[in-house]
Image (cartoon, helix red, strand yellow):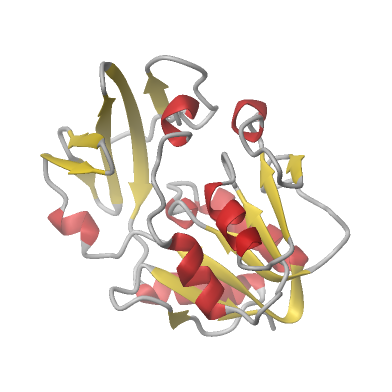
Length: 225
């Protein structure tokens, strides 16, 4: 299977990595901010790489954290109202300041491009204060074996997983989303990372051994060395 660029369809702008912006403005709270908040000290500063519309950061700000969001999509950032944001790719980011926690959510660490993963983790390390951490959301390795076509409803959104194609560590699929009479799709490829591979990638970037933040291990925090 050849890795193709991620694509998206549906009403409204689509980001370079295929994410439908209008859909992201409708996503409900799913407890991500609570996971991050419990993992860091009260009042800790947080940088989110790939913040989208600021859904997680807005809640973290309500918890009393100083937050800053970075995204390459002007269309996404237009919806991050009330938040301090910077338009930039994750890989090229150079803010010249450090944060107590750097957040890499949305399973970005599972990018199929190893060089992109290295660059994203490198950016996280540049911006993580010593004694701080990076917090990562990932696809669990077993998810790659169990994902099958299915339909579920959450928060008023219908999610439909289409055909699942596997090739070694790579998995490609299209997820359809329906809200009312509006439909979007997101076609993407993602790469399985074993625990050993993730620990190695974090270590190469200058982070220590990660600890799980959730029972299923889909969220982890690794200290900045």
